[in-house]
Image 1: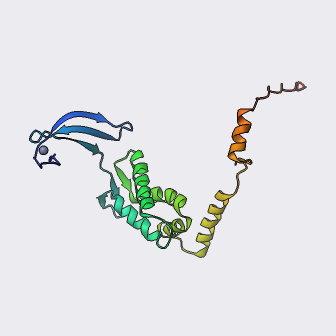
Image 2 (image 1 turned 30 degrees about the horizontal axis):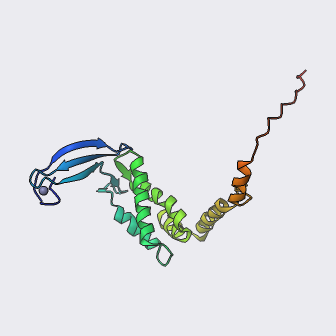
Image 3 (image 1 turned 60 degrees about the vertical axis):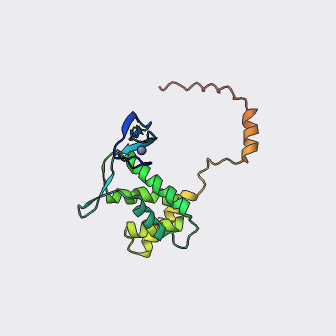
Length: 184
Ligand SMILES: [Zn+2]
């Protein structure tokens, strides 16, 4: 590993430790020439297996570029795109398998993109899932609508009022179960 300060071709490892999630190794290094210290992170290389069987290294920028196209004209910032790219990579790494089928990359994009922008999501999904007709769009939109409907567990009172209520809330003693008549 080259020293990033003086480009010396050698460095020595002072300390190695696995990161909390176990997905990478962090090494503290020192350059024997200029004596400056730096850190390297060693990560498993993710590769994507395309439908054709061709294998290529996972490329976060490629994910972001694909999503950016779907977001054209939508109020989505570069920061949000970058964050989405990170989320996708993180979720793929958590799968813990070094070779990811290209389809899985698409699946990993769909979730965060739906959170980000529903129009962009529909555009992306229409290409990725190969929507063939207007009905396919209608079905997907119907799903989005259902997910937005109230589930009945949203708080009915504003948060602060709810907090106040909670702080003075005295739990009831459980009502004793009624005696059930013995079956004959
Ligand atoms: Zn150096």
